[in-house]
Length: 550
Ligand SMILES: Nc1ncnc2c1ncn2[C@@H]1O[C@H](COP(=O)(O)OP(=O)(O)OP(=O)(O)O)[C@@H](O)[C@H]1O
Ligand SMILES: [Mn+2]
Image (cartoon, rainbow, N blue to C red; front, side, top):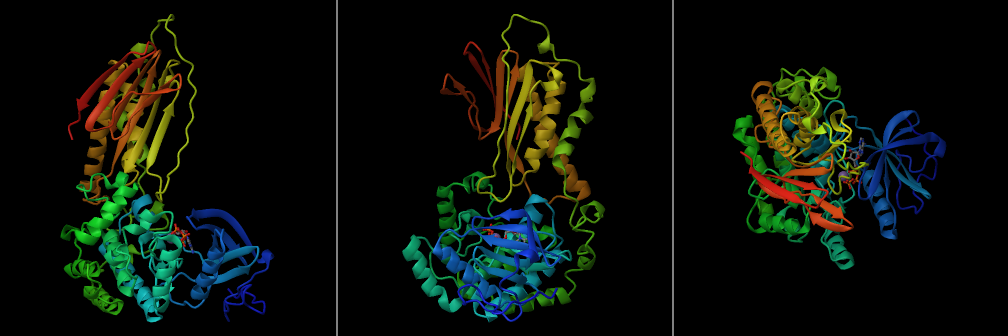
């Protein structure tokens, strides 16, 4: 693509200049389409520039500091030219529009691949990606630039699975870092290195102890984040969500007190993510490299040139056997054609919802044949509420939505039965999605045979067992799931049968009913217990608690 350069090719201020990349564009040369990502500080759009598909990053500019930041990022980006770094093809640096135009990387970012599409990488793929990423970082460091936000979400993949390091929003010249750090502390009272980003959780877990201690970032802090990232690529597990002892890190990571606790543990107790296990077949050299990268003492961490040499040796020794095949376009981008016999390649993304829906049918009757429920039988004197329902969901500060819900007014085609549920996914959406598919089906088959509370109890237990079985059989036979991946969810449901409301929950969630504007807790959050409560229109409530066999 040869883009027309309009002289003088500078930004509005004259501080950014390039000989090869246009810094202002005619409005007719580009069109922006739908947003592909909304960050705290920018929106990224799919777009077309001179007939070619590109990604446009439009920073949210609300203060003059944001504008300064745009110019700084543009100066930096227009100097970078490396195959492992996201390529800037143009910019528009004049009012009213400030935008970066990047080459479009079809396969999205690595965090999406691992945690949204829930695909696993082969060891060969990880080493290949890691080696290219290391070269990109070595290039940056040799220019005196520290990236300061290395993490899977900032690594974009093209259709050949080649990584391109992105997001230079925090990058700085090493020589300026001291000053930047002082200024940031003065202006915000907050340390540098991602703390000021609104979605700081995503970044916090990649931060080196010295950065958490508010010391100055160095190249070795990038090495630390690189180590955490490589381990995540191998395990497929978000750092620290795998530590069971970290009491439900999923939930608590979103609360500031645990950010502090995690910070303290990383800094003073040497807490690190769980290292990829040798059972995954990871070469010991790579495991040792990761551990040296995340050493508490920056001086003990290898430099990027050492890392590149070590990875080159691994590549030459054929540690990536089979990787060439794995990195074909088919095995990754066009999911429909994945060879699922090769457990090491990217797998077809799983549809846990339909998988869950299949279960009750396999185990019981088909839903079509389900007999009508006993409870719907006549009692025309009973008051039956008219139910209206709606839902709203937002994923908050997480990068992806892990929660699911379902709404079945007139459940099973019965006028006076309604069933609703919310599932809060942990370590991915798989369990929540599966349960949203399975739970209503199980309940439908159980309701005609037992009381509503008994049916709810059994539907919960059966869903739990079905998910475990499915996970285990996929682990064992199809090899599509990593051994140390333990997805889960909490669940809360409300079943209305005529004039009675039955609520059930498992895990740390509970139902609250509003009666004449007054909140009344119906169920209690419990762990390892299933809590069922029945409440009728006379204000009577009856509670039952069951231990679940896990
Ligand atoms: N060139 C590109 N091709 C394809 N997708 C892209 C491209 N650039 C960005 N994206 C998508 O947009 C997301 C956000 O981009 P980037 O990290 O640069 O923005 P950001 O505003 O810094 O986001 P955040 O604050 O969430 O880190 C990326 O993770 C990726 O999914
Ligand atoms: Mn980013």
